Image 1 (spheres, helix red, strand yellow):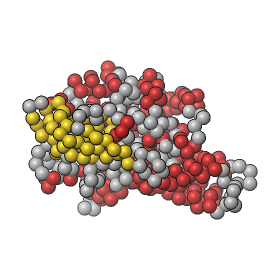
Image 2: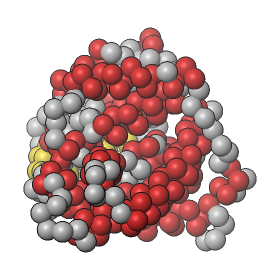
Image 3: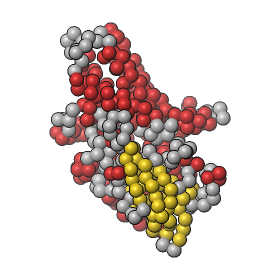
Image 4: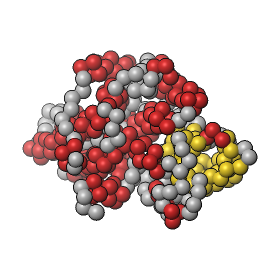
Length: 385
């Protein structure tokens, strides 16, 4: 079946939609006094206590098995949570990756001992994970990784470097894609995934400051890092298959639409004020909504596939490529509107939020796979290459 016909309309089941009111009430209670420019940092917002509170409410690992501390709910329940957190600008950066993909990856490929150790901690908001995929000189070309782990008498000896690693300086663990046999020229062969305790001797994490002044991307160095034998996830040499399945979780959800939503909502509040509505603003609001609505429908269709146990890799790539496009368009289009208005008429907080989102928007099409890599995957899915 072509990706053009594989996505069918889907709706959030009533029992999962019912979560929304409770989540909104909770966010109004704990998250009302944060200015918009801070809420716009939702993805990178580091707040361990907020994550632990979500764990206490049962909202982390909501799709994971109850016997491991999870909620046992469908992917649609997590969809509702993510949608509400991002639209409100909640600080989800601490637990984000562990909840979205590390937990499900360990559940699918990990040993029972790994599942028993890591998953309950993820669900309590006590174990934060980052993704060790990209490297210098390879970027989104994951098959070209050079970081290497070699077996020894104690387990695995790890050497190499990872790059663009989100929130590594705040995380306890990394799931790293590494080469355990062969050479980089072997491409997909000889790759494996390892869980790396980032507090082990020989691990160095260096944050990278971006144009906004924040530092959520990091570079991570491994210098003779000794890992135990049980650091391996899944089967040795099956890392490419595993990481491909993991990326379907990373690219599929509403998080690929809403990075600019705090800014959009703040702009809408401004243009609704007396004397601020214009024909151009009305057209702009309609144009943005006309793009977001079908993209949201696409993410729901991909979520339906996840609930059915499928791994919609190509569909998720399509969702991510188009979604990050509108995320990047929103600050540009809003800037055009605001700069056309009389000097001094635009609130400073709105301008502050616009400045932040504009500065970080180029990263939207970098994280989770660059546009060029995604379009290559889509082309193969359409049979064009």
